[in-house]
Amino acid sequence: MEKIATRDAYGQVLAELGAEHSEIYVLDADLSCSTKTNIFAARFPERFFNLGVAEQNMIGWAAGLATCGKVPFASTFAVFATARAYDQLRNSVAFPSLNVKLVASHSGLSVGADGASHQAIEDLSLMRTLPNFTVVVPADGPQAAEATRAVYAHRGPVYLRLGRPKVETVVTDQPFVLGRAQSLRSGSDATIVACGTLVREALLAAERLGREGLKIRVLNLHTLKPLDAEAILQAARETRALLCAEEHSIIGGLGSAVAEVLAEAGSGIPFRRLGVNDMFGESGEPEELFRKFGLDADSVAAALKSLLS
Amino acid sequence: MALELNRDPKYLSDLALQIRRHIVTMLGAAGSGHTGGSLSITDILTVLYFAELRHDPRNPGWPLRDRLVLSKGHGAPALYATLAQAGYFSTEILKTLRKLGSSLQGHPDMNKTPGVEMSTGSLGQGLSVACGMAAAAKTGPGQFAFRVYALLGDGELDEGQVWEAAMSAPHFALSNLCAIVDYNGLQIDGEVCRVMNLEPLAQKWAAFNWRVLPVDGHDYGQLLAALDAARGETNQPTVILAKTTKGKGVSFTENQACWHGIAPNEEQVCHALDELV
Image (cartoon, rainbow over all chains, first blue to last red):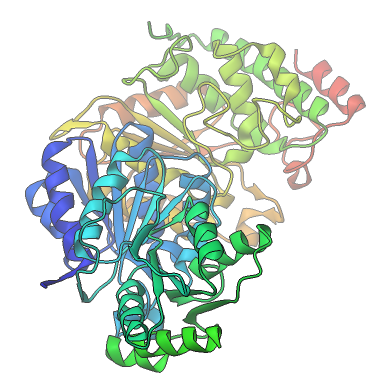
């Protein structure tokens, strides 16, 4: 199947949405060729603002546009979109609950050769803790396209996390609904809950373990907030172990969100978080980094086997 | 229907006096809050809301209204008293300032208080927001549906984001934007020139391609003339550097950095009201 980068899908749909809705404005911080907002910019220059390398100011502009009924999409790399402008997101967007769409590309280790300074591994943790924000991590290109439309239709602040590399399409026949997990594979032995690029690794791992006779369920938890707690608890009831996998620190992201649900429900299911283990990334090809940091399909399969044993 | 504006100095000074009385009384009732920076911006807010802004207190959501962003959110008591005086809500509510369940939060909350255009309090963010509003007003080349004003503190100019915003407004030719700096020369830890020198401030803004208009921030004639000039500007945004006195109008709060973040006690409220007549 064709490989599509989530950022490419976003850029395409954003331009389509721009033609349909004149209230959509787009902002970028000197990375429009990488975030793919340049497609919108070329078609609707009067509704596009490149604010230069000034992310804090960009978020303020977006907030101001939103107070006037516009629907601003603000894009840059995930590191700068969240951590760099965090107080602006907190006080000028989340607190007044303004209809700002923060769409960040280049998240996680799969940024690759640029290295640790550019690899956001804490953005989900940061964004999940802000009240009023919806947090979305699509698994592939077509899902990023659906998510972009859903994010526009949703009223309120949203963080949409995208990536740099082209990725294989893995979600084919499931409708995308904000806040509702997708069951991509059924199984009764164990569950892998994944988001973003780790959904594909989870599916590959489940397939391999299937050849060994294990029935592995795979949940795509594309919306971290609001969280589909029922899908998680159902998996905890119906399977014997639960593994979370994400291209993010094990602290504060998907794994933490799922752990909170399981602990509060009193579920004693064997559980493990797979992610970046409280450390920074480094330069390398995405596949090399996934292998080194234990996030490739082999590592996911091994982790699940050890959890089950 | 928009509020009828009136430029008569006596009318404005009577209103400012009443607003200062409200500020002192509400801060006394709250037992905490920012006295100095509220009294320093009272004349500026009075001129804006009663002689400059196109707005309708009976219709706070009017899409074509002019907007004011109080970037120095700790000046909230002055904004609340001005909005109440203009008719956005009853002056009776002012005494609930900072109390549990009140519509008047310690710092402005746009979702709780009619007439408050933006939630502020973390310094340095309001000018960027005002830029976004000013851009939203654009209907064509050099054409804008409304005007936007941002009121900033001088200490607030220490924040780097202010200068990011200052760079962006002229770049996009937001001539419908007017920033006003409450240049009272004092911030929490002391004199601005000692904590973090801003000078040469006029040259800084000019170098960022703003039209710069220094005025006495307590002189209605000078403020109105500067606002007129800003409204006539068609190419660039305007900044009014308003020289003010922190704690203006009450003898014992004037020019005292220590009055930045405290409220008067009962006795001090009485003394202040005796002076504000």
